[in-house]
Image (cartoon, one colour):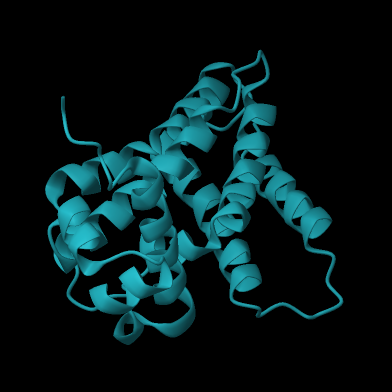
Length: 196
């Protein structure tokens, strides 16, 4: 009879969530494997068993952040209106960031100095950008957007979304701002600026 698996995927996810929280709220100095294990009520042996060490933990954290984000973006259904699909992708970007704020800094900043994800992880992260590029291409081919490189339009849209979400997550917006409608209007205005 095989030994029961004591370090399961649920523990792995709890460790990754807590590691993201520590990094995003207290910075890289707060992330020790001993503290992480204590915070999740497990042993450092479990952390080593699941990840192999701090470097692998950071890479797994990066992978998990982009996996969740990529799944949410990929779940946006493709309709006959690529422009509206692009708007919905922008809204999903914000929803994803708010659902997992502990991963946002891990994904889009150098929260851990000198950390570089492995090449496969970087490639997987880059693939999360492709659905937006594809929808921009659909809009260009349908004659709805001006004919410019699809990646340029996608980058401008992503930059706007990223900037507004970063301000919100970091608490840098006026406290009276009703963010959701402002965010959606900004996305729609940016999309409108690319119309033919």
